[in-house]
Amino acid sequence: MHILDLDVFNREDIIKIIDYGFYFKKHRKSHEKLLKDKNIAMIFEKPSTRTRMSFEIAINELGGNAIVMHSNEIHLRKKESIKDTAKVMSRYVDCIIARVYKHSDLVEFSKHSSVPVINALSDLAHPCQVLADLMTIREYKDFNIKLAYLGDGNNVCNSLIIGSALMGIDICVATPRGYEPNAYAVLKALEIIKEYGEGSITLTNDPIEAVKDADVLYTDVWVSMGDNKSMEDVLKIFPKYQINKKLLSYAKDNAIVMHCMPINRGYEMTDDVADSERSVIYDQAENRLHVQKGLFKFLFTSPSH
Ligand code: CP
Ligand code: NVA
View 1 (tube, rainbow, N blue to C red):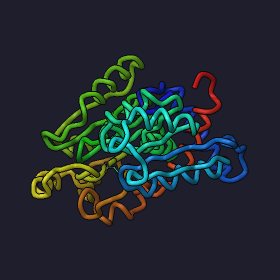
View 2: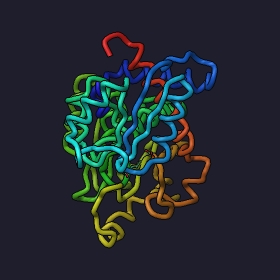
View 3: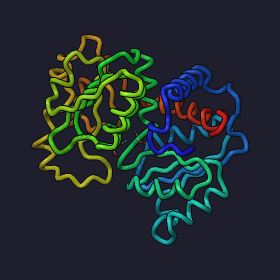
View 4: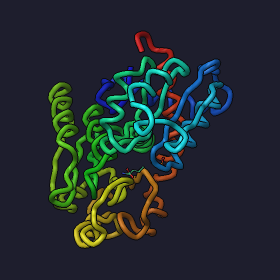
């Protein structure tokens, strides 16, 4: 099973992974070594703090061996085809985690890998982040909520849309015109919402419409790694989507504020909000570690994965 985005899961799978995550959060060091004798490779074409550290620590704490390769250390696409790299690496290791610029490269890689491939962020999706986000939402709320996403309709937004649909969340996405989420994620979400008969997705350009009566506010950077948006345009178009005290006042009184981090403080989120008691950003970051252990447990112990 390859995990390129959350649409490979159903609701039951996500609940299972999150529940495992809560178990691992409670039993940080004393649990079974389920990755004993397993080697797991991680490829990073872009920088990372949370993803790299949380995965490497998760692997080590579960008794496995993590091998981290940055793009300048590996023949990927430049000196060797993606196909050959994938075929060779999957003869060595039990799982491959990759952060890449182009999602299509990950699709190509996964086609030729005989071991599971996990997307650690591509230009299209960031499924592991959203597993941690759903775990955090579960920690503070339930899934019967309105979630407002504000800003750029990027990789995190695409996975959040699919994750929300899977859990029956009402998600309202407010982006500037021309920066909407990918149609693939929206269509997938609509299919899932129809299948489960609950949840909804609304796309708008109006941040106040999104935030009104929301239980959760979520934002991400306005310029993602590898984006070539002009800063001049960004600073003209995006500031009205900033999560600040004023925008937060339209949400429910007990609404929480989320960000996958890293944050450009003062841009998509103000300091006073990021550091307020409404902010759960550090829990989200911590939960990456726990839920990724849950993901390994799901991958390596569930039948047929
Ligand atoms: N949120 C997240 O994926 O952070 P990193 O880029 O630090 O891994
Ligand atoms: N959308 C951001 C997420 C970083 C974790 C990016 O792709 O740079």
